[in-house]
Length: 332
Image (cartoon, rainbow, N blue to C red; front, side, top):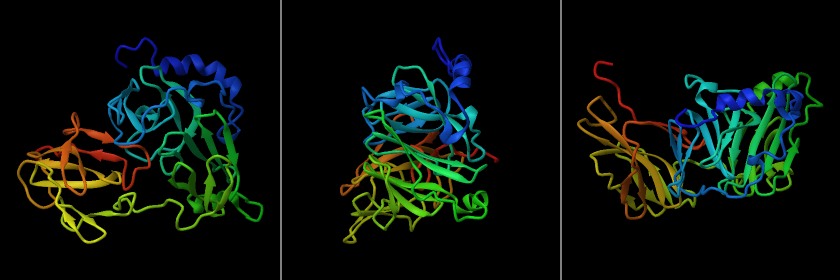
């Protein structure tokens, strides 16, 4: 845990009595501490730009680092810090469900939010960091609730729009088949697949309406403004192509590179592959480093401290929030 005097395990142990009183049951019936530090933001962190994590350290766009004290399985920046699921609560060999969501601010001590979340579309934060959203599905009862936390005001909203099960013979089976999940989130609304179909919720009111094509579900290969696309036609030689057909070859500083997702309208995230080889094969003689590249100039820069590391991007990043830059060992 490093040099901390108080660890997450210690905090969990000392909180058990309080939690036993506060928690009436799992899911949307859980009573949360309205006075908890994470509920109301007073010193919001920067969320616009590249955010990534390695081990127990989360790196924010303004070069602030947040130490969780232990390896992170998944994280989201919002409010005054970082919401995260500890790796020891959610083994990396399978998708996690009902994992405890913790919070820590820069230089602060971790605290259990009292919420539990699922890896697959169960939790999200707005790009501006103001809202935390949890899709709370109860597979014992076959019900679900959209929970919206305004981290600016401390207000919490629960919405059951799109969650009516009155006409369903077997709500549990229907919930399982529906595969409820958060699909996309903007600064104003969140779109989710819920019991009655795809619904878009207003983040300030919780009101849900039937989702349409403009609800924020996007292609991860396309820049947020739609002006550029990642062309994956040639493995580890991806190009950037504009709407007009202009092709930009990233100046990755290596003979091969991969591009994964967009950070903003002009910045794409990827990795450079140094060492011998061709095509899409990566071996023990290669080293991989995370890079960012910009359009239209194609300039790229290495991200310090990422070479040969297992990295995480914010949970929900598409096509994946896990970026494994380690290489196979010789003979494997």
